[in-house]
Length: 283
Image 1 (cartoon, helix red, strand yellow):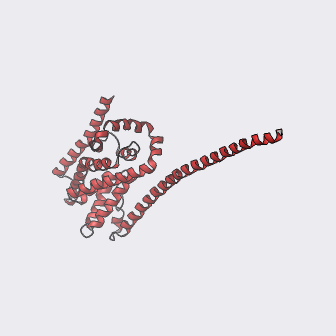
Image 2 (cartoon, rainbow, N blue to C red):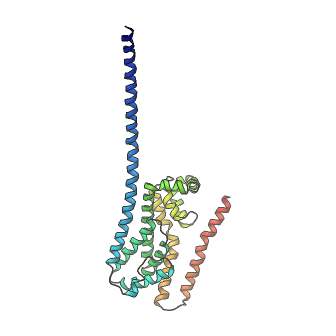
């Protein structure tokens, strides 16, 4: 009888243990299912970034390989310009073929510009100068603003996929300080983005990768970029047109060109002075 009662007592105890065990297993499997999509999402984002990069490389190769046949001397200048001399030499070559291959030249410049902006690669300033060298002022300005907005928006989207970990790991303090500034302008983000693009208070590459991390919406980011890059691009494009004028006139001295270059130099210093003034005021 005692043995029988012991069995009756142990029965419910074993059932309860079994239920607890099943619930633990179920919770574990749910946790695994919840963690698995996150892992897949990160993997998918990484694959997407790599695929986009490869797509750009393939597209640029297609543009290069389908370009009209150039001489061996000209071929050495067909590359992304990294300085003003590279931009001038590339401009001379492209200008010879622009008449018969206008949209090919413009499309290639558009593609290379967006590539640099998307992956935060330096050198877009020389493509802005090249745009001024090749095209009328307003065409070049719209081209540069559109490329800047498109490339920055793509960089924004890439950072939304993978940038959070990178920003919080390598720039935690910088991102935190900038978030405080952005929070002060939440009601007027468009104007604030325009201001940031006009002045070098925050580097453009950092704005692009950190904006989605600190909660800046894409629409004011993109529109603010389009408008904000216009003033600095104005002088880069004018510099390219001045360079073109000096080249076609085949003269080292041109009063109008020299005046514009001096104006460009003075204007380029103003944002730096403004940045230092704001920094001292904030301290």
